[in-house]
Amino acid sequence: MIVKKKVPLPEELPLATIYDVGRRAGVSVATVSSVINNTSYVSPELRKRVEEAIRELAYSPNLLARGLARKRTLTIGVLVPDIANFFFPEVVRGVEDKATKAGYNIVLGNSDNRLDKEALYLKMFLANRMDGIVLVKAPGEVDPELERSLKASSVPIVLLDREYSKLGADSVSVDNIGGGYMATQHLLELGHRRIGIIGGIPCTSTTEGRFRGYQMALKEAKVTLDPCLVSTGDYGIDSGYRAGRALLEHRPTAVFVTNYMMTIGLLQALEEQKLSTPKDISIVSYDGFVWNDVFAPRLTCVEQPKYKLGFTAAEVLLSRIQKKHKRPQHLVLGNSLRVRETSARCS
Image (cartoon, rainbow, N blue to C red):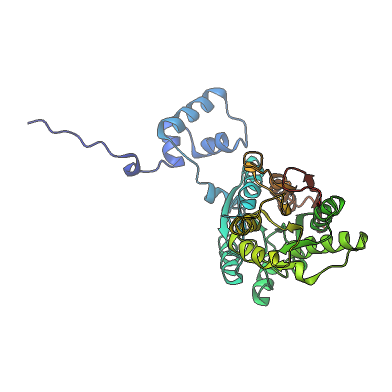
């Protein structure tokens, strides 16, 4: 009778410890630690033995334990309103790339633009001793008790995209006023005077800034703002559709849509009413998508530097974690207008 020895599956193998590595290499734990952390001189022969033992045992240092010993966890909390929004994946990628390069991991949360979910994530970030937080603020006020906890914890926070002065935190955003002005001025230069706008979530700095830019451009051109041409959404596709239908009843010749998701909704409303762009109505979208150059007609848009926005936010946060700056930094990145096929001269 042949008895087959059971080979343990990888998940059944016990995790090797630093003591196992020391025994395998025939050296002290201190020597293993010096090799791993590169904190003191170890002879080439001993270093080779330790490195071979690490490979053979598939040893992985306990990063959490190391971080706690240094009073750091090497993790950054990132909280966004809606990861399904095409804007945020590239922004988060920018944060992650910079954080990873600096030796940090990120923990991603999705608030759904809800204050209660935002509060839960922020409390979790604090409880898990995140080294810093990148926050895209949900609309509304932070609970006073939570605000006190955030300030008392001294955990660095960088506000990304949306501003919220009450936290007194660093911020990285784009020039929303300039972008709104740029979009509206482009349509004015094409001869449009009945220019509608689909705004985003009220009481957010992005919505307010883009609307202010729209107002400034109209005022400069001596065009009276018609309240009937102002419609409001929530940055989602369905809201863009509903706002678009309401707006089309007042016959604008052009529409400035303050984000890409709502632009999709407006295009659905146009198709439903058998209208086309730019023949029947010109469209400028705030921000676009990588597929803009694939679909027809190609979308005229104010492009935001999404990746750079996230990367810069992580840079500022790491600078704050490393105590390289003391005063709050408020960085504003520029946009660019990409004129394509959905904007044409008013006939």
